[in-house]
Length: 214
Image (cartoon, rainbow, N blue to C red; front, side):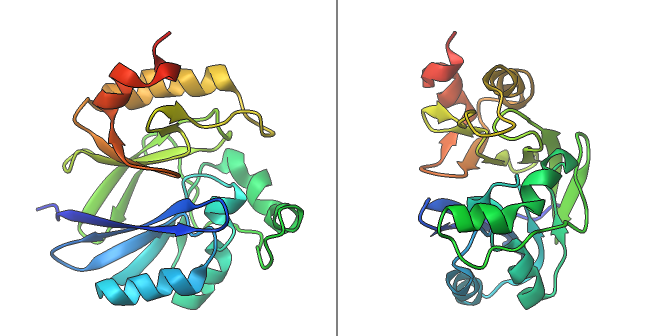
């Protein structure tokens, strides 16, 4: 019997990235998704919710999503899963990227498990399928709970927008193709938490997102 997922958003870094706690309402076992920084705030939120963190999940390798992952892994003593290995170069260069943006303390990250299309990830009694959705970054992945009709999409798609593709490794056509061919077919009723900004549903974005109308 699959658990009932709960989620809490903790905006972190000057980029106001949606670090997300996901956990099972039944077991209180969960994961931290995209700990870009502000680790003390993340740990305070974990304590406030009374949950046990089992792993760290990364949607992709950009600094605002992954900059705090290696230190948080050390603090919590848990593994990191994701993103796709195509983002290895981004994770390797996090210290330099952090310095360029004035974000101190970012460490290079090597996940304990790279993720690929068709993989699955468990968080306690929750299960997520993995979609490889490149375009914003080469190794971006989407975590989908088909049972709960819920997804964590990183910077692939936002409410009213899509991920920027002007960073190294970005490709706009590839991103739109991934959204239209992999993400939207999951179903209009899928609610999602993006890497920035408010939550939405795939149906709302399919009908109103200007980037998906052409």
